[in-house]
Image (tube, rainbow, N blue to C red):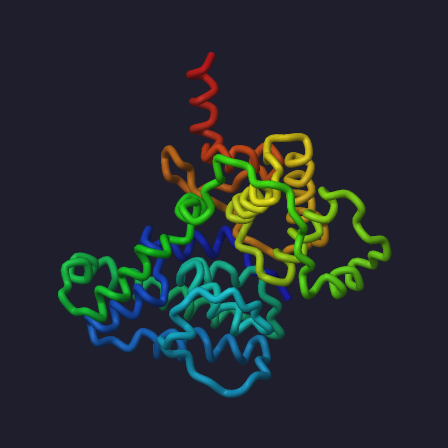
Length: 306
């Protein structure tokens, strides 16, 4: 079956440009304001058709705005329907639909994609028409939903930095905890030899974290690695720290994509335009320096320094 072209899908979605991410909390606030059953629309037009084209075998259900679907869970999805619901909560409606290009469909998904794009267009227009009413609403439920978005951020790499600001001081080296899924990792990778150096043990801990506890994406992953390095007494800029960061990059980008797929785009800190970075150790270090620039702005910066 032909794969979904991501660029074409993004172009179709962006026919209705809506920069704020349409998380379930934001959509629930919009539903309260307008009285339109947006969760039912998502269920009928996207979730139920997705169940059919991926042959979902779980217990019957209908998507609704509930505590479980509103929150950003770290639980690993076991099927594509759960994957969509998680992506919707973590990244927003546009991005969750965009991820369809990674799904394994068992029959032609064209109707699903058409319906999903149409739903996004309708919901995005509705949000843009009512954004001021939402922001000025005195309804406590609406205010609570919007406050969750403010506390969690928009979910882009530049916004999640507030959760993982690298520490100024380096901690003392201490015993690295044994991850509960370590034996499974060894079995999966065919590892028979235990790590010997402190660096190898810490890298094994990082691998387990991202493989079994969930991978937040490349940029956020870099920041979490930096936090772990600081916590366990290693400067990310040191030779040892750079070795671990380099291994992280290799594991994230290798043929096996050890940690799983992730968002292959970000936003420029300067012009705020979306672009696809060149993922590398150099880019990882730029993330730590909080200098995420698109090629165009990066070139301007270089010319300014000359």
